[in-house]
Image (tube, rainbow, N blue to C red; front, top):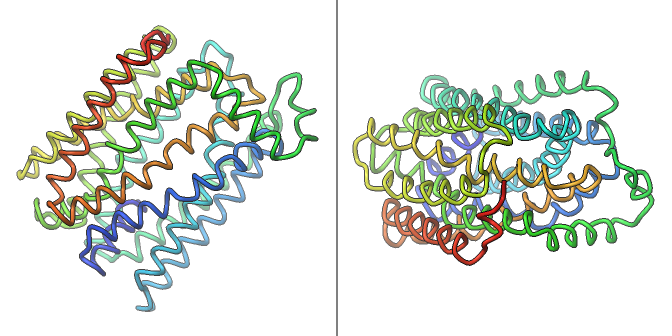
Length: 379
């Protein structure tokens, strides 16, 4: 919902693709500075409390946005500042949540569990953008932010009953690591990720997708308003189509579990992800665009859900918060990708920018498959 509302609000105020890219970049910037701290905090301290605090802060932030819109005081700089703050909050939320999922099930069911989490996430991604678009079109953008604030409050209520056994990292050395300095804890996380060939290959795959392909959604307001001429509700339906595809793919991953050849799935999936986004950029007919976004969603899981399951599978519990944070930090290059998308969109038009970047993303996946044999061998 925030992706639709924030992008539409900024584009409505500025009509600038460049500023859309800048705003997405600001959301990603906290990943660069705060991810190592967030990952270490998840491995050292109360993960449940970390999630609850972040959700409460997000609820407050969305309520502030709604108040600014209703009062007529909203300015582009408000959108930038709250985007940065929201990015910082979510940076602390994700490593704790991912580590708790990994600790809640036996090792042999980890792929299924992470994929089921992705299934539920993609259910929300199907419903959320469509709901945001409907609220924007019928009531106004403020209503979308009020709904987001309410939903974050509901998420907090649902988090409270989680069992105490999931609050702290397990493992024989976990308690000892809580007495170490943050600096040493962060260095240990990076050392583990650098030396483990599987984690290193996953970082290369997700980094490539994060730079070349994932930021294409930055230009969706431009596509929706200026190319397809379908407005905010149409943009919501495009993201809903992507959510439908990602949902179907996540169900497949959840059902296959460890039987899936995850290395090839990631590499082929990211290649097809880039090609499907490039195909989407050529469409000027809204029904076809929605159908192509479903295909995009099918392959998006290969650069997110499957990578996450592999990293969590090959990581000991006491390192899971930090490796999740490092994987999250790899997405910081979305910052640079978003800026390039915005600049190319301004210079050459949104469809051309998306086609160039997505095509480069597909080629980079082929290059990783060729140059990093360990990526192909991941099971």
